[in-house]
Structure formats: structure tokens, C-alpha cells
Image (cartoon, helix red, strand yellow):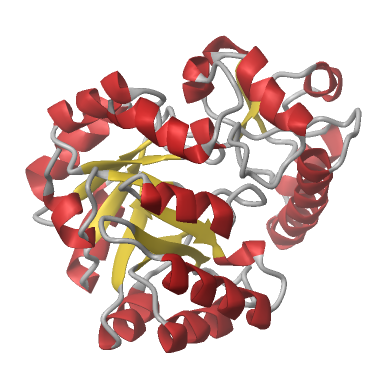
Length: 315
């Protein structure tokens, strides 16, 4: 399974364990590296810079041949911790950084100065060409089968338009739950895949057993889009609670969102409320079950060790 991504990160298989808010942790990434793939954690999973620094050093100490680790940065103004997180990553070192939701220019400049590779989330050709011009080492093509905030194009459509127009490697994100899916994305022309939802139901994940079991019990047909978390469409499991509260923004939110002066603040408030609700559902037993996941949970049949999930994706 040698590709541009395996060469770029010196990994055995062209797979990145995707960064997942609240879910990803060092234990998952260490086991992923032992399985021959790369692992990534959102920097925002750590409340303090000291916690982030400790995680980096733990991963450096545990790194194995054929494995690789990185961190995800939200690079827009909503993340007030961004610049300090970037500074710590560059000081301590990691193999790669994945950027999301903003311009990666500053991240690319600082990371490249200390030998860290930068991959950028993109959902269309226009933004992909921009990040290539800025010097990104690869583009992560977020398609319409991704979990969480997804793109608008099918995996095949997005991969083919990007590989036809870009020279940097393309990593497909979304719609991968088994080895056949990995092979399919590589067959479309991708240099690797980013896989998230199947790892929610890993023994090492920092979420409740109820969340993990939901990924086993529900399938692709149970994934719905909701605007009730962040104000931006996001994929979640269609639990009874989600059915009860609905997936559309409220009448009041709809009216306020049409006001240019208030729209930004409404979205920020909605995001804050939604993130707190998501965190409670992921980390505590609660009837308010808003569980983020993608349709690739269709292939999740049991709660397994991370290494077993890697094996299911590679053998």
C-alpha cells in the first residue's frame, strides 16, 4: 500500500486516524502508530498549553518505526488559542499539522521553519489550489460522507477534480469504514485516507460506552444533518433525542441569522451551547444524546481495540 502519503510520513499504510473533538487521545494515537498508520489529535482537546506539551512529549517517547503523529489546529479567529498552540507545536515538534476552518498561511510558514509538514482540510478545488500555492504538503479532501462538518462533493468527484488540478498529495476524508473503502479511495486516485468515525468505538476512546455502543447499533441510514450544534450543518446519529429537538435551526435563530449585525454573535452563541451539549453527551451518561458520527459507522460491529480497527482497515 505504498503511496505518496506513506512516503511523506514514513508509515506502513496510507491512513491517518482523523482528529476528533473530545474523542481522540494519546492512547489511541500510540496504538494507531503501532499498527503502522498515522494518528492526529485536535489541539483543542487540551484545555491548557501544558497539557498539550505533555501530550506531544508522550507521543514522541512512544513513537515507533512506521508510525507518525500530528495535531489539528483550527486556524481562524474563533480559536483564540491558535497562535499559542502553534507556538508549542513548533517548539516541541511533531510530524505534521492538519489545519481547518481558515487560512493556513501562518501555520505553513512557522511549521516548515522547524521541519513540520502541513496538511490542509479542503472541500473544493478553489481552496485546494490556494493551499497548494501557500506551500501545503498535502490537501485533505473532505467529502460529503465525512462525519461532523462535511463537504458537498462525493468522494470520487472530489478526488478526481483535485488530482487533475493539483500536484500535492490528496488525502480523502469521509466514507471509509473497511479495507474495501480504503482500496476504493486509492482507486479513485487518492494518495491516502483520513478515517475518524470507526475509531469512536475503540476501547481507548475517551467517550462513554453509550456513545461507542451507538456507533455499533446504528448505521449509515441513521446519520442525519443538524444545524442545532454549531449553526453549520453537522452529521449526527439520529437518536430519539435528536428526533425530539429536530435538526433545523429554531424560528428565532432563523430570524436573527438574517440580521447582518447579529448573525455573527448568534452563531458564536449557538456554537458555544452546541459544543457544551456535545461534550456532555460524549463524556457523561445523559438522555441528551447528540452524538457526532459519519455514515462509515455502518461497518462498526463491535467495540474493539484501536489496533484491531487498524487491522480491519488494512487486511
